[in-house]
Amino acid sequence: MSEDATEEPAPRARREARKQVLLRLDPKVYDALARWAADELRSANAQIEFLLRKSLTDAGRLPKHTGPIPRRGRPPKAKPEEPEADEN
Image (cartoon, rainbow, N blue to C red; front, side, top):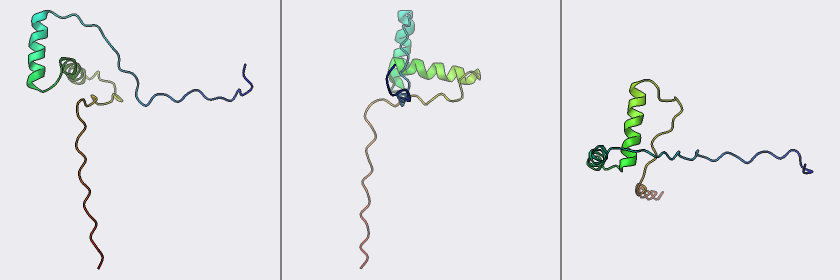
């Protein structure tokens, strides 16, 4: 055992790692899902997560402290700061 027995465990990551799941779908089901996702400007993966969360919410089974779906893509533009008024 090390001399410093009071070491604290490393802090938890800010976000938990996202789970990776292998999903097998009928090709026609995937094509329909991909078209629907494209219509809503989402990836097929994001569409699947959106639909699963909606179903869980509708069934009252979504855990209370579930975070929002992470935003993908380009971050929003920062609004330019307004210049301060001169005090003359």
